[in-house]
Length: 270
Image 1 (cartoon, rainbow, N blue to C red):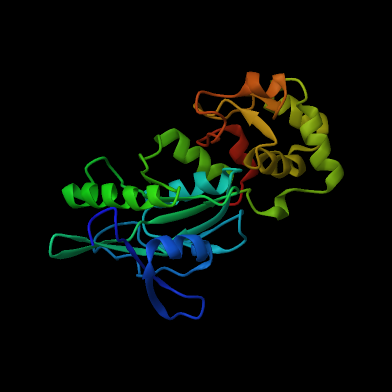
Image 2 (image 1 turned 90 degrees about the horizontal axis):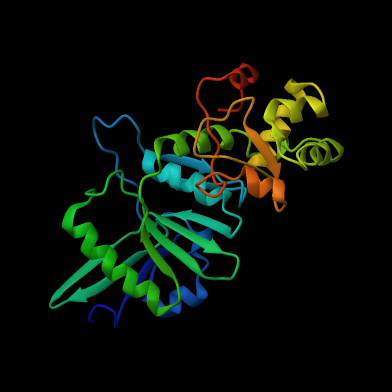
């Protein structure tokens, strides 16, 4: 099979049976977001951060993760309102180059609300994987184009943004959404842009309100400048309003800064 003409998909079906079929058929019929990894993430001796699991607020399930860079990308995708499904390494793609069969397992699968999907790799730096990874990525991009999907080698997140997401993700669980009346009051408190601490204290005791506040930021109900550390004077606004647009940062409101600040006195789910 020539590249771009005859890709095959290999995956574990819902009962754990290894299956291979034409890529175009599998892409249309298989819910990859519900499948286990087709192969385990490698454990690299000496590396401080190894394979693990990410609990997805989008799906309520764990997603296999293979590196720190991948976990950061999973956090970003988990917060993206367009994403409805996530999985780690659920499919291996096969294709032929001349007489040789090539294969590649993209690290991330993300399903969008419109039914399309993203296959992605999460290199820790631009040169990660070398020429083989670049060539495989080009082939996977062709396979995705056949079915109206997208492949990306996701650039590592900015360190501040990655730290911000890690902080905010500590409040992603629904248990932090609070009582409906408090959740509504938190959003209403920022109907016009105002400093974080001022808005939180207008609702009530900060110890009780901050988890609800951070959960609202995770869900995108509130917005803040996300390309700089979050502090008690940061300007916050409600999403979808002029206040919210004024409070948005350069990265479009997709992360929240962490770091040492007075807010850390509250703690937070790490």
